[in-house]
Length: 611
Image 1 (cartoon, rainbow, N blue to C red):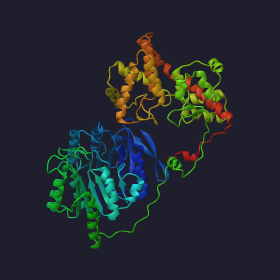
Image 2 (image 1 turned 180 degrees about the vertical axis):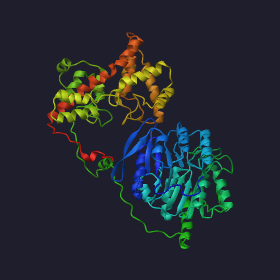
Image 3 (image 1 turned 90 degrees about the horizontal axis):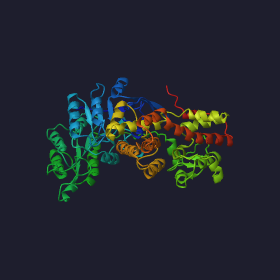
Image 4 (image 1 turned 180 degrees about the horizontal axis):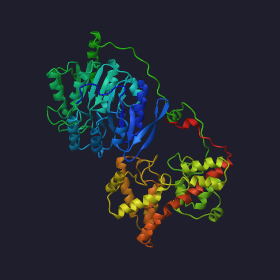
């Protein structure tokens, strides 16, 4: 375990398993503290590479993405902190990969529920190689005015209120990340603020202990007093008791162990953390508080008294000039994201495209103001859809029958708003004065693996996995090892608690009218597994159409297996998307010409001119 300071104003980290919010929060904190270089040197996303666009103050930057831990460490040898946002299933292997890199000095494991046997292996390896593990089940830590891990300390408002943008004189360590955020605020109210704070995590076997960090704090000259917040369960606090008794800690320590209410219950109670379970008097909050007090720590009679206890110690240190409070600096204002400012009514921004035929901003798309569920429920035909998207009105039945050739998948995929790549290309081309065919083709040419062309792949992979009797776990994990995203799974907007209405309609139709939906139900089981990993890994329209089209071919008993494989291989299924989207793209062409829109030029402020 390290014996001194872990972080500084020049510390850089590698972030594993990209999450936009915690990375952006780290960069916003960097700007707030006046750092010259971002604290996030690179991102590791297995099987991916490239860049992620993020903000560093007012400037938009491109943060590099690497497909492996090894590649990221080679590219950034000065980045010595590894922040691991992997799930509990894969946290062990990715953490071990990082520990084996000579450049990595500190590992932070965010996931809760990492198997205890795996955690013990990580602790043993880290100790043998003189490295530090924070977590598992942690929010991380912070050195005020220098470096912050992920979501530590919460929002910018809380960080500013807790004065974490500049260093104070207090070292703080806790098991709980949530209580750490609360204590940072308490410390700011009654002292000159935090110097360093660590949440070691609430699992039974943390990678580093309360006493590990207290002993570090004792060796950091800028830290003049130490605050410890423990909890019932386990015996971690007793190593701190021994350190106090042996005189290893020379700075004043204010401590409290939460969970005293457990004595009110007749039976043993499991609190929120895996380790928060009293197994006897020694592991009780009362037993630990008594031992800490007898060892020399300042221990209040209740949690409510902790703030005044901290204040009392601080005031004494100020009176004897051990602490000389510094003038309070004014932190810079962190720029607000445009979409947040617009939502809060603080700014207004001009739009760049006008669209009158489709709106995809609500729970479900609308065609000329008509909800897509209404189109299905009222048995609209293809002619009705064309009339809405091309003529912006519902034409009489004799007109729609004249142009009608109804197919459910075509209706659902005809258009999805002006912002998707195909519609955007068509709109730009139409505004350049090009004819209908040119405008249509410019949009159709964007159809491929990343836009609308995943139906064939979804059908191919689902069929192969189902026919081989692979469990959803085996299927998804085998795709992950190959570095291939599961086609038909994942959505940028929809979530497990906000499903795509189109998918629900397709599933209902299949279950109602198809003799068998074995492939669709397999896709649903795959979705159940992927949702356990991330809430946006839902079955999307490509996956629903691909799996149901397999069921259509298989259940009608008119095609051999060879013929089904050939149909999927040739691209019949993507042909449905091309046919469907042609309707919408023609509609967008007419819409722009009817509106007499001028030549489109993309605004330069919407371009990252990367160095």
